[in-house]
Length: 122
Image (cartoon, rainbow, N blue to C red; front, side, top):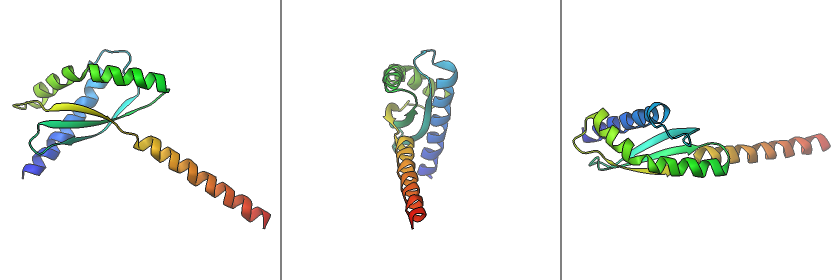
């Protein structure tokens, strides 16, 4: 039963953080951010928030700084919106799975292309 509650709180945190980034956080540096997941400890004390950043590297660095600066605001808002007795400590984690997926896809495309050329030569 406890794990079910943790999963529901994880979903609620992900939803609320996404909404905050879209509507409430006024920092203009925060653009092209997607919350891809939330991992919450069983005692609800720590929440790892996985975010994907898009755009050029320098913009991503600025966005990362702005996100970390907004953590205090996001934590207090989470406590209000979800009505938790204690707000979990929020830790941001860069989710690079999309970049990795794109990299793997490009490798597969190259292999497919090379095999296509090989068959044409035969």
